[in-house]
Structure formats: C-alpha cells, structure tokens
Image 1 (cartoon, one colour):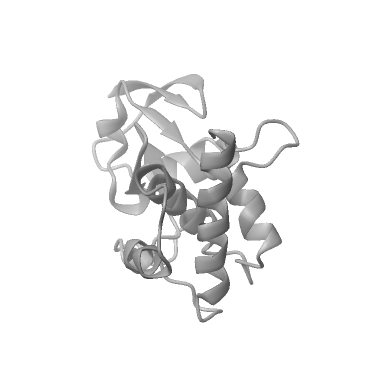
Image 2 (cartoon, one colour):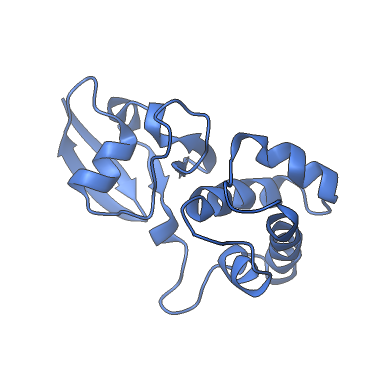
Amino acid sequence: MQINFKLNGKPVSLAVTPDELLSDVVRERLDLTGTHVGCDTSQCGACVVHVDGLSVKSCTTLAITLDGASVTTIEGLAKGAALHPMQKAFTENHGLQCGFCTPGMIMSAIEFAERNPKPTPESVRRWLEGNICRCTGYQNIVASVMAGTAAMHAKGA
C-alpha cells in the first residue's frame, strides 16, 4: 500500500506492506537511526517518536497507519545547529549515559512538557514509566526533563 505522510516536516511517499513497523521504516528504509529498538514489545520506550504530536512506540506501530500523519523523530527536533530545549537540557544536566534510551526519553519528555508546564519530579517519573534506562538511577533524567520543561515554556518551544 502507498502511504503519504510528513517526516520531520518533509513529505514522504512510500509503499509499505501491511505488517511493516514504523521503527523499521524510519531506521531501515529512511536511514534515520536515532530511533532505537530495544525490546520489540513496547516495554523500553527507546523507539518513541511523535505521530501527530503524540508519543508513540514505533516498534509496535504499523506503518500503514501513518497515511496522512505527521511523524517527528529525534532527528527532526534541532533547528540547524540549535538543539531543541529538551535536547539541550539532557546534555547540560547529564541526562544520558550510553545514549541508547535518550532519543525515546527526549521524545516522551517533550510531550510531557507540552502537557505539564509546572511538573514535579514525581510527575516526571510517572510519565517516564514506559521508558527504561539501563545505565542510571534516573535522577539526572528527571532533572533534565524539569530543566527542559522550564526552557520550553520560557522560550515557547
């Protein structure tokens, strides 16, 4: 089936099979490898992208459902050399270690920040329950999301 959608703001037209996953399309067919697949079962959150502004786990989202949608991956966040405020916050607050979970964490955190202009550390932790980091105790991730949220609302990102 032919689908047409926007990927990081650019139109894409692509033939997909009924069982093809969004994560495979993005990584293997469109060469955007920032979206990681860690579990193939929607448990780890490393594959999170935005579809029409909402966080979705791309490892269990069928590509066929994207027709007419707008998809944003981690590669679509920066404006040239200027990082998105959440990306910058993760860098400045040491919210990453090996980096495998980071794209999914950031994509999830952006939707969280858009919905929660005044978060608490507890609300950040609850929101990120579907994202697993195997390297850290999450303290710096929570600090990064708090700082990124404040920066997004200060700059209107």
